[in-house]
Structure formats: C-alpha cells, structure tokens
Image 1 (tube, helix red, strand yellow):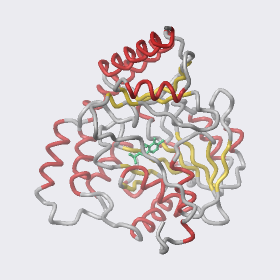
Image 2 (cartoon, rainbow, N blue to C red; image 1 turned 60 degrees about the vertical axis):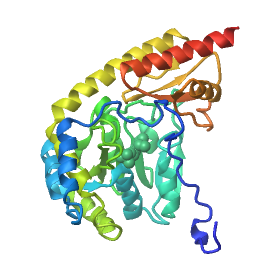
Image 3 (cartoon, rainbow, N blue to C red; image 1 turned 45 degrees about the vertical axis):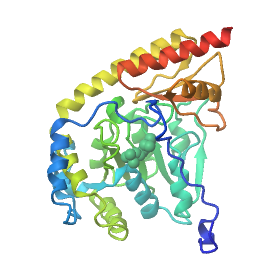
Image 4 (cartoon, rainbow, N blue to C red; image 1 turned 90 degrees about the horizontal axis):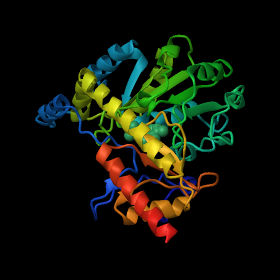
Length: 355
Ligand code: PMP
C-alpha cells in the first residue's frame, strides 16, 4: 500500500478471480465459462464494429438494449446494459446502499457481494444457508435492508422457486431486492416477469455464461423505470461509455442467434447430468445443480487435496478455504471430453489414494 491510498480503503480485501493460467494448457473448469465459442454471427458483428473503434460507443447502447428488451418482453427504459453483470451489481450497491441502508445476502454465495459492500462503505449481514445449503426465504422477510440473492445460487447451483422470491420481494416493500440470474439460463425460472408488478425488484443478467461472451464483458439489469433511472445516474457519474462498440454489437447478435445458444444449453444440461451421475458413482456427494457447474464433495480426500490433485493432473477446478464449504469444490460443466478428462483424473487420484 502506498502512503497515498485512502485510509477508507485500507481494509478492503479485493475479490479474487478464478485462476487464468498462462503457463500450461489446463482443462479449465474453474470459472464457469462456456466451452463453446460465440455463434459465427456474433464474431462477425464484433469484427465489423472493430473497424469503427475510433468512435466512442453509444452511451445508451440503444441497439443492444432494444434487442434485450424485445427478447424479454419489457420496455427499453426497463433495461440497463453494463460492462459484465459485476458492473450492474456494483451500481446497485452504490445506488441503493449507504451507511444507514445495508445489504443482506447468504453466508455462502458469490464472493463479490461483500467486496462491493466494503468498497462502497455499505454495511452488510450474512444470512446462513440451511445445512443442506438451501436458502430459507423466511429469513429474508422483513430484512430491514436491501437484499441480493443469486438464483441459482453460486457456488451451490441450487435454485430458489419464483414463488419464494416473490415472497421475499413482497415482504420488503421499502428495500430493493436484487436477484442475480447469472446462471438462470441453465435451469430454474427467471423472475423477470415479476418486475411488472414490483417497484423494488432488480434482476441482473450476464452474457458471460450462457451466451459465451465472458471475455466481451456484457451484463444488464431489468427493473422498473425508476430503478433503472437511478442506476443510470450512477453509470453516467462513472463511465458513460461502459459498453464498448464490439461488445454491444456482439450482444445484439447473440440475442439474434438464440437458437445456437439454446442448443449449447441442451448439451451443457446433458453433460451436467452425466458428470453428476459419474461423480456420485465414485462416492462423491453432488448437489442437484441448476447451473453450468456442480458443487461436489469427495469422500476419499479433502476439498483442498482434490483441487491440488486435479491441478497436478492438468484439470483446474475451484476450491474455497472457507467455513462450511472447505470440503467442497465447484466444477464447471464443459464439453463432454473435458468432463471425461476430469473423471479420468479423479480415477487416477482414487487409485493412488487406495494404494
Ligand atoms: N454473479 C455471479 C453469481 C457470478 O458467478 C458471476 C461470475 N463470476 C457474476 C455475477 C459476474 O459475471 P460477469 O461480470 O462476467 O457478468
């Protein structure tokens, strides 16, 4: 830390992204990326736009906003496009949190929420998941704070029914409820239709996972017009050109190529069922995931040793040395042959452990 760093940030512990190794070719099952490239039309649209990079992007991202609004049956004024969904989540903490109005979220969830809270000096409280890692909706009723819940949750992959979310939204009319649907396309039911009826609901989405655009950085929020206006005030006070030209064009094309992505979702769901069954056959406990990853615990070794052992065998997964989940690992669902490589590496570890 330099002597110039604001004391207000001295205690900030930044988010640790999953490894993006440059040293070796790994089977990369650690950051929930899609194993499939963007649709051909998406690559062409981004390349065409590259020839106009001397010009600023449209601060309203009007074309991709309209494409998204039409796709989800909402008005463009109910949508805000952002630089990944991390940006809309940060905007939400900035717009709706302050020293008096904090946030609550599960004790086991996306690790960026406490970082956004700390960065913006917003107090937060963690609500424990049940022992089976499910979310107890009752614990969020009358929370006295804003709420952020990932649905499906990460890293568990467990979905929360829309009726339970609606119960939380109704029980907190004076606070904003943010539902982070980063993984909803892989299973579970979206609560975007609820925004027509509730002025305190913000749904966040990303193109990173189900639309193969993690490196493009495109996310968005859907909410009533007044919440979107507030979020725009933050955006125009931060970075009006937050979505670059190539990414905006790629995003609009990705909506137009929906059939391509629907087919990939089908393959991921098939590979998820295969991986879940094969890991269970090997004695793992695997949660029933609605996302593009599974949360699993081996019975022959620890979570840290599974992570290390697979890394040594060229397969990267994610492990957190955190309370309640130290025995568990999160494994991204990739292409079939990637999952077969994972299982072969697991078999090798099990053989070694039994020697
Ligand atoms: N929410 C959750 C639950 C996530 O796991 C991620 C991915 N790390 C994000 C949001 C943010 O993704 P992105 O910024 O790529 O849209």
